[in-house]
Length: 300
Image (cartoon, rainbow, N blue to C red; front, side, top):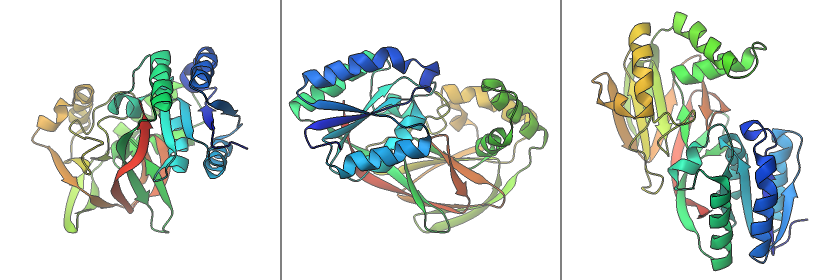
């Protein structure tokens, strides 16, 4: 049981190819020096990890710290979102988009020092989160970006593939889906205003980037109470391939075929697309996404 004078740590052993193993002892020592008992949550699967986070919060933990990448953060957010439990991030993943967006140091032990200092001083920063619900009413929290276009289609393809292993599987999925690229018919509702359009890219961002630094929603601010929505008109395979490198700097939004919006609540509908939030599978469209201002008490 995790008590009120304890901090729970969710550590993903696979994040960043095992980089957390060198960071975890230093994080535990720093948190302990702040006057808290530290309990590391051990779980063999993502489902077990999320359940362990929920148990820690239910048992009254003072804080939950995620040691890993965006996938680890996503699991932990399901337990701490919209609660009084503080949350810390120590980034050691391949992609650390949420941590970067909320001002967490990319150097793990510097981030650990900041979490420990915030705990010791009793301070936190309020950060917005997004909540996505599917047609059945099932909901999930996410911190960074929901993909509902070409990138989501690629993720779905990659997850169905058994080979090759590692990043090459995603690269192959991109090539296969580019070969069959076609516009999808979308219905997009922004704070009750509905529009219909054909498109190839749709993203809803609480933060700016996904996929390890691709700034798909470059102006998104996780403290403004709004979601940023970026959509792209029908594009050829060549045009899309040329546009993708511009995502790193966020300059794709200057292209006249790319459109940006802001809203508190977004509903996206299209046939045959499964949405992905923080890189994790959410479910088939239609999806309803709402911004919940200040839903996270971030230690930094």
